[in-house]
Image 1 (tube, one colour):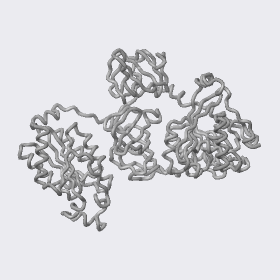
Image 2: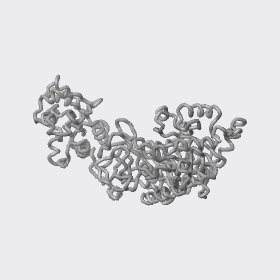
Image 3: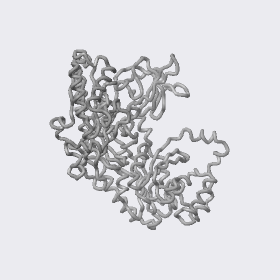
Length: 640
């Protein structure tokens, strides 16, 4: 009998009394799971079958599904369950899943959110998104093909992200005549791989998403299989929230709730553990302590707040606490550090640039971070650790990272909320990587900032000036060094304490180990920025003359300085004019191929979008430009 001949009826209670239906399902536990594996393993079909068998499709949806199955389906006159999930036109045309599709369904025992993850390697980044919040992963294998590369990749990522409940669903058993030997061979092959990557256990089951074997009921076609059906297993497996409830209390603060003068609370989602009125708490990273007086929700006060609940905590003391801080129990706080080893999954088409500053977002904390050259990348087929200078799209690697200030964290294995993060490009705001903190570096704990008796203000007062960084940027041959030198001579003649950092001069000493690749250019500017900051601490007016071709690095240096100290001066000279000057003969070498990674020829220059000064050297002489800069600076800050 075909699927269409089965009498199909959704839960009648939905139509009769929606409030009663909602009340019936209100207190069910929620399981989030993903389906993943290689292309055409039947992930979308399986989810469609689950939706159908759980009666989560209404009559009009079923009619549309039957019609679409005849038009664009792949199962002849049978219902193509994959069409319930493959909603994008491009997905239906190609018969593949491109984006992560989320679907909700429920049974008598539990509610479910399932994410159908794409199988193609180029969409691995979408799979990581779906897996990041999952309690369980259903890894599908086509019984005809066995364990494939993408099966291994997705299994490794699931384990890496912390999913410990793995179901190995050997699908399309109907196409191998329900042969037990085929099933056993696949399970043995997968078990060997799983052991090599640290998967301690998994649940294997033979299924057919299309025919419905072992999905909701035991199949007569596999009498040799004595395990649970897929739905039975999903209904009884332990969910992540129950595990989180037994962990130490952690609540990242989302915002300070101050509706009136008589109420002040700190709102957030409880990540792990529980909290009660009267508990002694600690606010991190400051370490301030207080006591909880109320646990407030929209529906009233609670005697206890638990993991997964959004609450507002009222404290007995007026402690300094804001978004990004973390509240824990006083006797069991998490750590804070600013240097870590982390595992990264690179999600961007453009490769990672070691030394470039990105935004790191962890829970409610957002800080600037730099990533060092990877220690290694992982070959998911062999589990080998391979040397690499960067991370390409979908690469998985381990690298050291450093944040610009301490963040509250836990190792990812101890807690996803304070251990998992994303990296965001500062210029495009695109998410470029997902990461997991492995541990903080010992040097981060042993190296502390030494308080000094002579402050930067005292240095500046002694010199009777305000520290500044005059950052000259432009193409090679634009006239940066010439104008910067003239500005310094004028300031020196006025009795100001200055120092000029020139690009060529710095590469003779401090940066002589660096080349001219994008990564080396980034590190070059980072080092110069740190030196410039130290010089402003000494009260100096620092002038720098560097091509500094990337906006992100110029903004990184700006962020190191106090407000108003960084002055960006764009020496705007057209490429053809700079090349015509070619005092050092560099453009000629670059054009002939003798000089690689030369800015303006085979390496980009990102012009400032809103510089503090713009100097057009085709319309203004170096002397006039220098005079204008000095006069403007003296006018902005009379004590300079």
